[in-house]
Length: 281
Length: 229
Image: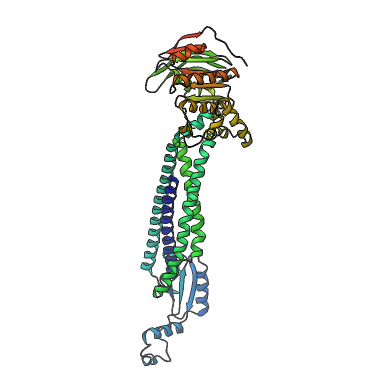
């Protein structure tokens, strides 16, 4: 009966852990996706030959901070500009038919591996000969970096808290188990049972509680996560671009082993150390 | 077999339970340890079981110096001792058979051996037909017999009995004592702690009297016989 209560409390803890884990993983995934869309743009000195631009592009791509670069020619820049500003009144653009007013605006869009590295990359780019101007999105980069850090800190704090609660619960279960079976343990010790013989049932019980206590919430989370991602994708498809969820398989590739290991680990260590404390065998 | 040299035991509370005890018990002896409450009888049993360590002095049992015994060697040592208590200490949720079998499982006895040994012990204590009963279905005397069977099933060479008749009526007390005598006749050294003077007088065995932590007399009554094995 008491083991059942322990399984239930353990399940609740692992379930909470799972929820936080899913939220954190998805946040990080979303931030990562957003980071990939943060770009640094570099413009070149007037009349810089294409070969030199290519050479600069190769140098930039070789940097560790850079995940990808995209060259946009002056013509492409002008086309894009027209699309945005003259779409409804194309006749206004006709005045520039033979002349590209953005002739000096060929540029590279540089995508970062980690948005936190933007500062060092910009410093480097500003020192490269042939580059006239570097446009950076410092604010977005800072927000994302800070947000990522905040999530990391919060997640570590919550996970540590949940781990402590779980260990405490298992420890409590074992302590009560020892109290309930005090007589039996005393008899075992008097008869000549070895330490491991006395401890084994408690440790096995702890591990089983951990294993069952982890399996139930993991199963439930698998079901709920699948349903939730399907629901959000179906009902809020406008936000699909913004809310990028990890697939259930990707999520559980990490969560399943982590959850089970956590359950078994808490069960084992919780019971083992409580036994050392309460059973002087 | 049991040898205590100048043993003292002081508890952390300041109580001096034993004060320079020297006692020798030979193999196959039947010894009563008598005395009032607080005389140190139970402390003596706890020291022999290595539940406690003496403050000073040496204790040797079966040739082994308990003072030098490592903690992990204690279980193996206890397997050579059988012990019964005033309150029987049976497992209430298990029947008679399981209570005795439990003692064998603790020392990892093969199941086949357990199935052979338990009925044998039950016959010895006269409870062969009650193997399915639970402790609460038995009288005090019967429960103490089960406790005795459990203490003996691992074939210890010493049996320590701490007030084994303390909760029994005179008739049952007599029967338990008879059983202890039979066990002694089969070669087991028996040490009985009691304050039941009537039983002690009837049994005509060696009697060690204690008072406030010291041995005040050690005498063999008329008709005393020692069983050597």
